[in-house]
Image 1 (cartoon, helix red, strand yellow):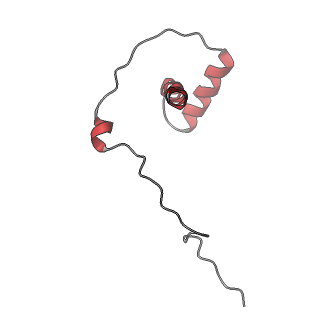
Image 2 (cartoon, one colour; image 1 turned 45 degrees about the vertical axis):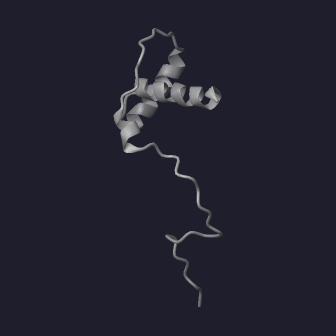
Length: 76
């Protein structure tokens, strides 16, 4: 008889990680935004439009989030 594995239980050793999520107060403060004009390749814009449609969001927001994450990686 096979022993069934509970797929909801973690497998292996568990380790605690630091809390990296922003506080609700940090989320409530809007960031200052600057409008810019940028020319992107048609294929890049089409990619973001397709992906945004899949996730029911705006493609400009996805591009902005991508740039923000890139900048944060190289900010430190």
